Length: 436
Ligand SMILES: NC(=O)c1ccc[n+]([C@@H]2O[C@H](COP(=O)([O-])OP(=O)(O)OC[C@H]3O[C@@H](n4cnc5c(N)ncnc54)[C@H](O)[C@@H]3O)[C@@H](O)[C@H]2O)c1
Image (cartoon, rainbow, N blue to C red; front, side):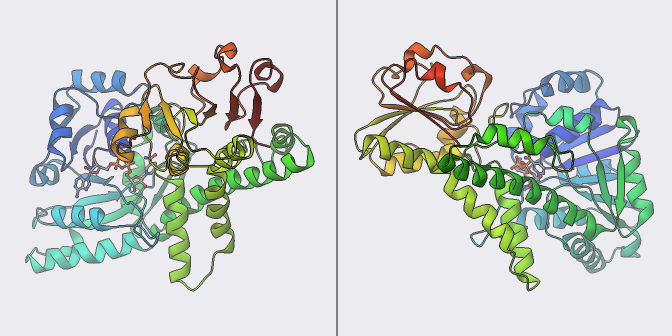
């Protein structure tokens, strides 16, 4: 079993670290956030992710995982150093690599004359970052006077494809594990860490592995924007987009996944990764028309409920709207780029009063959105519904599947996830609007 340090204990670093520990490796998780590390040392998880608490306590019981804020400890401990820090978007849409660069810099301060470390990029980084990182690290070791710096490390790209809300399942049952390095031996050594999950392996050069991650996320985002565009056309023509999507998905060349019309994609990955690929394409002299449209359709789709409510209610100033769901999808407390953010902002800008509900993501939403006079968080999903003019279903959490429809009496219901049946809702509601 290998010794693995994981730099960055966010969604990806924590899930990967705990899963590697569960598989029997010895794992040391490092983060700059001392409070997070203190919590983890005490056995408490800073994120909500199904199954994670169970395998975390198993890994802790078997003393397979520990935590630190000290880079010297993390470098000394590990043969493999995984980097899983954030790569958020910059103003211009390109990926901010400052966290990744800082992690490399700190790691290189502690690699010595007799070391050989494999540094594995799990963060999603622009094509070319792995090769840049190798040169950066070698130069830094040379400046420190480390002997034969090019023999002290190899860089491997191992992009992560897990879905929040199903992250543990995805780690243990990956569709594929992609590993790229310009040193094939290092790539196969990283591949061996996954032996117990017996994945389909794809081993490539480092730039190709980096590109696979961006291409995958951009393709899935494109499928979502495609079906949303089809939905909007269906709506005008009186066709049913859910049946159209089923008809498309039955063709095995297309597949049914990611063909669900809704309020568009969000989360920490799709929006930023499509934007980063646009930036990468432009830097290489290509104007990526299709990727630009993917973003444009998505931005417009989030505001569909606002257009629909204005068409029904006229001005929204002073109107009360209940939002069900703040997380960008069910099964997670992550609200990054959630459609709920754009919808809430637009409603408040129109002067509406917003009553917001989510089973787990309220605190994160409060933190990331901030407070506003007319934004009120509700504990029970039916709170204030009676006095509301409209309800928007944003996230299809199971607890919204089968509500007490009689509570919809007299309201306009915007079903942003096509969850309910029109004939059932219309028994009570003033109107029922869905996507497509
Ligand atoms: N979240 C996902 O679903 C997902 C899926 C696949 C890939 N990714 C990619 O994985 C990477 C990490 O994403 P995430 O969602 O886990 O991010 P996150 O923001 O949840 O976690 C990042 C962590 O890194 C820590 N950190 C930042 N700089 C550091 C440094 N120099 N040293 C040590 N720790 C540092 C932060 O404190 C934070 O805890 C990103 O590149 C993302 O695009 C994310």
